[in-house]
Length: 96
Image (tube, rainbow, N blue to C red; front, side, top):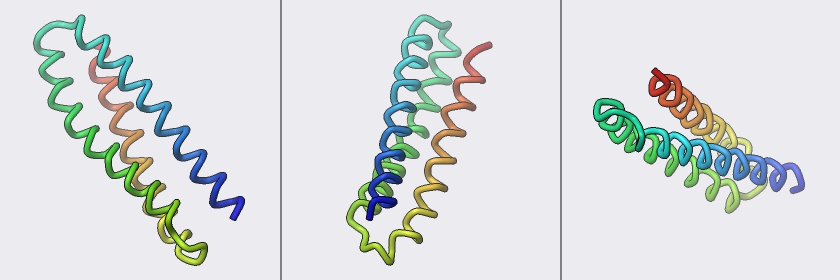
């Protein structure tokens, strides 16, 4: 049970870190030109969906029986990778 709790706590911390990074991107985009702001708004919608998916997976992991946790953990890992990659891609594309 400790491994499950530790894993979920770690996933929640990672989600919180990405939320802070998205807030920083949002602040930078507000000061950017119209083209960059428009691109950010479009990409932000995609990232919100990926974030929602990750949050759902965290909740499923919390509620899962120990024997089902490994399967849910795989889905959470995939959701994390997708969301983190999306945030990095947006951050990198908006730098220019």
